[in-house]
Image 1: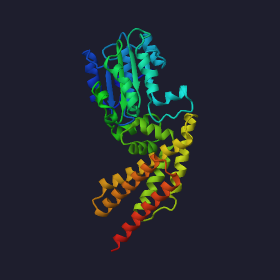
Image 2: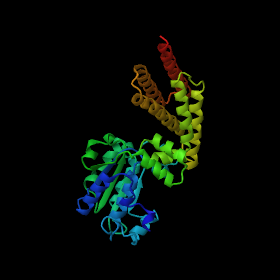
Image 3: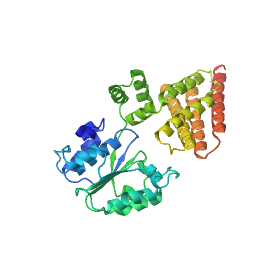
Image 4: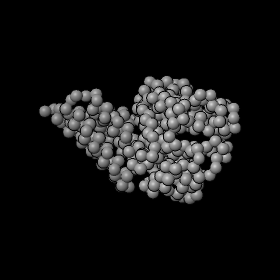
Length: 350
């Protein structure tokens, strides 16, 4: 049964984090509030679920759940009454048309604070995992403080975040931070190979995701990798002095394909918001290409071009957040990048 939920031994490449958690658990010094901090998709959620299974099992062997008890059976069935994932989209359960851009105080109160004050169904404690904890607004974070400081009974609260600095100091002071790091691309590629993903896609996804297995898997599922290939080809052509004349059209097509996938996953997804998320994603991938140019070249012209291009991309991302018209943003970005490479080519001739 234990293959139905993760254990510490199934967590990839996070030896330091697992070692710390193991020692804390075995010495009965596990804090009731933890922040798992690190890049997206590197094992924070897997580790949280593994820790929850261990914490809720009444008969573990060392740091491994027994796999036979009622608690383990319910964890394997993803139906444990004393284990809860708390995430921003829960807001839509009560208000289907509500936006879920942040983790609201209503979600924290209803799905964590209130149930945390109830007796556990199996009488062995409760575990709450807050996904994207950095998206809690100030009111939501403040509503959590008392529960973090004085939890009812045997309660464990785990906050997952790739931006722990966004958490209030009062939250950070009441929790112990456990650091997770990016995985080696070779390890990510191997895991993708083991999941029967074709070698070329696995290698490129591992490279683009920069050490995040979760990100690589999501991008493969959402069809991002083929568009990422096209984007890098467009940018390579541009750097070679052959700017594409359809860069803005590329971003539009890629965003629409990504948004369609998100709606397939969740019919309540806002199409416009999904397009903006997609555009932000492809902007990050474009910036990644220019950041790599900074590492690859020591040519002053290349370095200046890369820095200016990254600034232009960051400005476009800011305009997205400000809800500026999407066609205008990407027409201007394409024009700015084309001018950059044109100026570079002109400089090379003199």
